[in-house]
Image (cartoon, rainbow, N blue to C red; front, top):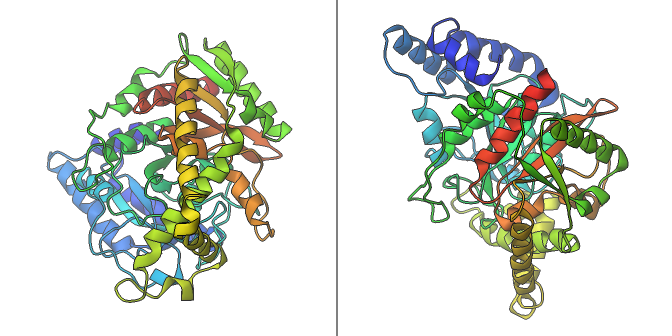
Length: 461
């Protein structure tokens, strides 16, 4: 059953929230020691919430749209009385003193927060190997990385440890692990979901988004979290559609009238075995009635350099508050190699004599990339292609920084241009999942949701 069907079972008392929770608690206790998806689990608190939901349903009282759904939260999003460590020794003792806006919304709709998931330290990575608490293992490809930085959230879904999970995406940190773990991950339009309560990696790029094993779960959690927040100056005022009803309404398999743009540079940058799987997905979508056109993106070579220059500067600025006075320990004395690298690079680029040479030029390049991506989307409904250009490496493999950064090659353009994007499973190569990325114009999440649901149903038939 999908997530929407499960919520109906709970509301109709055919399945209790407590039964749903206990099933996941059992799986977490069995699997988490080896997978390391969760850093902290609050079973008793979750049980109290599940019992409350069951009692309200029994009494005929109204419950929220997420009633009984068990949810994991990335460890850089504030949840009151949970450890918000960002997987770093720096914040290992830091307890959330308030709920982030997205957490408030999840709780209001009766979602059950089971715990905090593992991640790359301060979200600085693409493999979830830089965590102070050890790497997360990929349940869908044993021995390999789950991707990052939201690897714990993706692995928790792939291992069947929770119904839904929340992550953050700065340059692909939701879509990358979704691809490697064979699940769905969604990065909304910048500003569509409040960032209030998220520990910054790069504030002009960060976005909170959902993970699920099916499109109805993505739709349900996205419509719950989205919307304007007066406490977040980056949030947009928009009428959030009922994404979950779109999934139900698009239960068929048709993509008639949908125009898909394939960027040839995205294909050329990817390994051949990945391209073959993506082309197979395109053939299916043509069979479903979609029109496919080839596009060219002339600024592909600018994307990674532009993204990392901006990220280094904004990350350096964001970490200045971790000086050991108010939040945990001094970051430079307690962080790992990749976090330290980004702090030093950001410090260097931020200096007056270098900011014009590097940072300001990166901002100019970003404007150019954003303009070009919007031009690509002008005459198509969606851009479609690989999520990640290569397969996940084996845990413990030593990579040069540039090789690690290359995982983000196909995802950073969506963050630089602020558009929505998702990754869903396209297939497997040697039993390792390969993700298909869909991108749309700003605030056109519904086009992605509808296409995702149709493709999902086509593959079930």
